[in-house]
Length: 107
Image 1 (cartoon, rainbow, N blue to C red):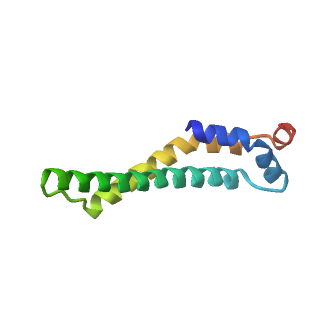
Image 2: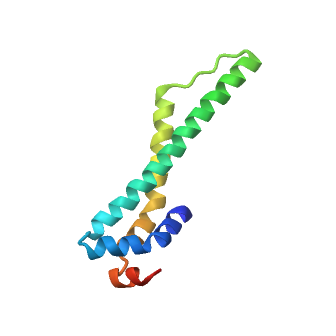
Protein backbone atom coordinates (compact mmCIF):
# COMPACT_ATOMS: atom_id res chain seq x y z
CA UNK A 1 0.00 0.00 0.00
CA UNK A 2 2.85 2.38 0.79
CA UNK A 3 4.35 1.88 -2.66
CA UNK A 4 1.02 2.74 -4.26
CA UNK A 5 0.58 5.82 -2.03
CA UNK A 6 4.03 7.03 -3.08
CA UNK A 7 3.11 6.35 -6.70
CA UNK A 8 -0.01 8.50 -6.35
CA UNK A 9 2.01 11.29 -4.73
CA UNK A 10 4.69 11.21 -7.43
CA UNK A 11 2.14 11.15 -10.24
CA UNK A 12 -0.16 13.88 -8.93
CA UNK A 13 0.61 16.15 -11.87
CA UNK A 14 -0.14 13.35 -14.35
CA UNK A 15 -3.45 12.68 -12.60
CA UNK A 16 -4.29 16.39 -12.83
CA UNK A 17 -3.56 16.43 -16.57
CA UNK A 18 -5.69 13.33 -17.15
CA UNK A 19 -8.59 14.77 -15.15
CA UNK A 20 -8.37 18.11 -16.92
CA UNK A 21 -8.56 16.27 -20.26
CA UNK A 22 -11.75 14.51 -19.23
CA UNK A 23 -10.73 11.33 -17.43
CA UNK A 24 -13.41 10.15 -15.04
CA UNK A 25 -12.77 9.09 -11.46
CA UNK A 26 -13.44 5.49 -12.46
CA UNK A 27 -10.75 5.68 -15.17
CA UNK A 28 -8.10 6.86 -12.73
CA UNK A 29 -9.24 4.43 -10.03
CA UNK A 30 -9.05 1.54 -12.50
CA UNK A 31 -5.56 2.59 -13.66
CA UNK A 32 -4.17 2.41 -10.12
CA UNK A 33 -6.03 -0.78 -9.25
CA UNK A 34 -4.70 -2.54 -12.35
CA UNK A 35 -1.20 -1.36 -11.51
CA UNK A 36 -1.50 -2.66 -7.93
CA UNK A 37 -2.85 -6.04 -9.05
CA UNK A 38 -0.13 -6.44 -11.69
CA UNK A 39 2.61 -5.63 -9.19
CA UNK A 40 1.16 -8.06 -6.65
CA UNK A 41 0.63 -10.82 -9.23
CA UNK A 42 4.18 -10.37 -10.51
CA UNK A 43 5.45 -10.64 -6.95
CA UNK A 44 3.33 -13.76 -6.49
CA UNK A 45 4.73 -15.30 -9.67
CA UNK A 46 8.28 -14.60 -8.54
CA UNK A 47 7.41 -16.14 -5.18
CA UNK A 48 5.99 -19.25 -6.86
CA UNK A 49 9.14 -19.63 -8.95
CA UNK A 50 11.38 -19.17 -5.91
CA UNK A 51 9.25 -21.66 -3.95
CA UNK A 52 9.46 -24.19 -6.77
CA UNK A 53 13.24 -23.84 -6.93
CA UNK A 54 13.53 -24.18 -3.15
CA UNK A 55 11.23 -27.22 -3.17
CA UNK A 56 13.34 -28.84 -5.88
CA UNK A 57 16.49 -28.12 -3.90
CA UNK A 58 15.05 -29.66 -0.73
CA UNK A 59 13.83 -32.70 -2.64
CA UNK A 60 17.31 -33.31 -4.03
CA UNK A 61 19.16 -32.66 -0.77
CA UNK A 62 16.96 -34.86 1.41
CA UNK A 63 16.04 -37.34 -1.34
CA UNK A 64 12.33 -37.07 -0.71
CA UNK A 65 9.39 -36.67 -3.02
CA UNK A 66 8.01 -33.12 -3.02
CA UNK A 67 5.69 -31.72 -5.65
CA UNK A 68 3.93 -28.50 -6.46
CA UNK A 69 0.42 -28.89 -7.83
CA UNK A 70 -1.29 -26.45 -10.19
CA UNK A 71 -3.97 -25.80 -7.57
CA UNK A 72 -1.32 -24.47 -5.15
CA UNK A 73 0.14 -22.26 -7.84
CA UNK A 74 -3.33 -20.90 -8.68
CA UNK A 75 -4.06 -20.33 -4.98
CA UNK A 76 -0.81 -18.41 -4.53
CA UNK A 77 -1.54 -16.18 -7.54
CA UNK A 78 -5.13 -15.57 -6.41
CA UNK A 79 -3.99 -14.62 -2.91
CA UNK A 80 -1.30 -12.26 -4.18
CA UNK A 81 -3.75 -10.61 -6.60
CA UNK A 82 -6.29 -10.21 -3.80
CA UNK A 83 -3.63 -8.55 -1.65
CA UNK A 84 -2.97 -6.20 -4.59
CA UNK A 85 -6.65 -5.27 -4.81
CA UNK A 86 -6.96 -4.68 -1.07
CA UNK A 87 -3.70 -2.73 -0.84
CA UNK A 88 -4.39 -0.71 -3.97
CA UNK A 89 -7.98 0.27 -3.23
CA UNK A 90 -7.28 3.19 -0.89
CA UNK A 91 -4.52 4.78 -3.03
CA UNK A 92 -6.69 4.36 -6.14
CA UNK A 93 -9.65 6.10 -4.51
CA UNK A 94 -7.36 8.82 -3.19
CA UNK A 95 -5.96 9.42 -6.68
CA UNK A 96 -9.41 9.50 -8.23
CA UNK A 97 -10.63 12.11 -5.76
CA UNK A 98 -7.83 14.59 -6.41
CA UNK A 99 -8.92 18.05 -7.47
CA UNK A 100 -7.56 18.63 -10.99
CA UNK A 101 -6.55 22.24 -10.31
CA UNK A 102 -4.71 21.39 -7.10
CA UNK A 103 -3.08 18.41 -8.83
CA UNK A 104 -1.83 20.57 -11.70
CA UNK A 105 -0.32 23.04 -9.25
CA UNK A 106 1.58 20.31 -7.43
CA UNK A 107 5.06 20.44 -8.88
